[in-house]
Length: 57
Image 1 (cartoon, helix red, strand yellow):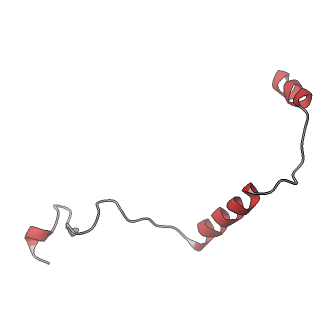
Image 2: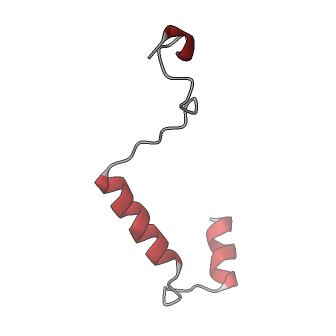
């Protein structure tokens, strides 16, 4: 690629600066589990009084 089409760091002017994202299979799996868990409605529940006691402690 011609020098005129490169930034000072050597990257192409046709790429969005800092536009690449990196991840791993482990991160994608963790994100999938979080999204699945966010839709659950069968979790344990506590009363507002329990929350107040915990806050005081």
